Image (cartoon, rainbow, N blue to C red; front, side, top):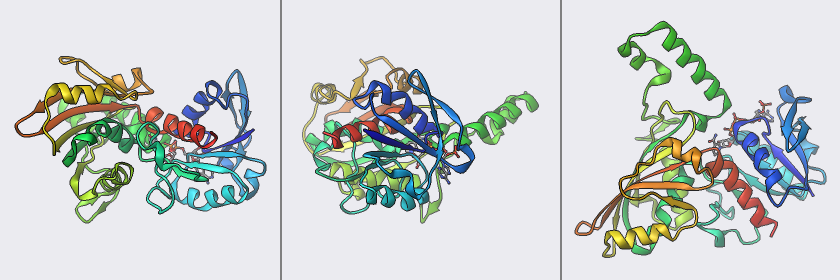
Length: 323
Ligand SMILES: NC(=O)c1ccc[n+]([C@@H]2O[C@H](COP(=O)([O-])OP(=O)(O)OC[C@H]3O[C@@H](n4cnc5c(N)ncnc54)[C@H](OP(=O)(O)O)[C@@H]3O)[C@@H](O)[C@H]2O)c1
């Protein structure tokens, strides 16, 4: 079997290449694709190396499955070419997530949505952690859900990580005073992720609309504030839910505990972004507070944005597509 990894030199592509040799695709021939700048570059794969090729129109000859981990415009251009060449495609960009007829997949949450689709979309990294955490509570009916995210730098790709290191190192070198460091661009907490459209940043819109599509919830019942924080890997989200049915703490913990994709921490243990990396193939949930009279649940969920939030989710979709 021939598999293309498009964006093989990026953060998500690199994590995917780490997972493929341990997956059901271990014996596949891997075609590593990236920009012309990376053509000829050798990158580690399994116990050897792959040579990166430039992504061009005829890159998909003989490819049965293609994982796309590149920007929206490039996906818009090359995904149709991969499909025309006969490949099944898992696309991690924003290009097709809300397109009618394209399933937006979070394996373990909405497996039935896949059908026999040849193209499936992978949600935004924050959406994935969020829907894993709230899906088990759908059985109680969700009247309203309010989310505040704390998103890591790596969610914005390799250039953002390099820029962060440079700026943070510069700030620490130049400004040893705590208040000056607090003002440094790289070390701020910024509730403005992606462009502002109306009164909502695009990252907030993605969280609402994608979660609504995946869970079958009305988007108007979801309120989100997306915040970039100076953390390298591990997206966190503080969630407040108002439920329809009667609940108590045992019912809520039982529902969350039944999910094989969640790591539910006992009362008193605090999930941090570091737990996201420690439990990379699960979403870690803690700080669970249930108020039965108000029918509300508060919880804090953390997820590795590159792993379960991107590459692993995409790999699981690819495995489902190939039966
Ligand atoms: N980072 C996350 O947490 C995350 C999570 C979920 C989804 N996603 C989505 O996944 C995609 C990849 O994200 P990322 O974080 O891995 O980005 P990244 O680190 O910036 O990597 C981008 C990749 O795109 C390639 N590329 C750039 N221009 C190209 C061109 N003209 N032709 C072919 N390849 C080109 C780059 O190749 P070169 O190295 O040659 O430039 C690189 O391999 C994005 O759509 C992103 O929204 C990211």
